[in-house]
Amino acid sequence: MGALGIGIATLVITLAVVFLVLANVGSNTSVAADGNATAAVQTITVAAATIPGWVSLVVIVAIGALILGMLGMFRQG
Image (tube, rainbow, N blue to C red; front, side):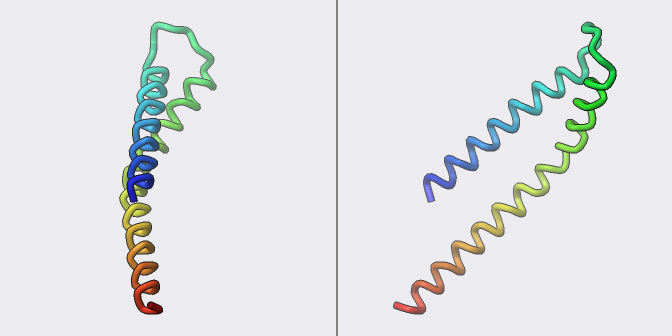
């Protein structure tokens, strides 16, 4: 269970850093960037706003699968 927690924490930290960088690039008005690139970054930032809702669902499903697996293991024993 420790490796799973470390993996989830690493994923969350990595995603947070990536989204912070994307948000800064998307809101940077001092650099004359390509309009398509700026629009793409803004689209990704808006789409990434739905990720926090999915993370909790994935964690709950993973915990449920672990519990069902342990119940199945103890039932056979």
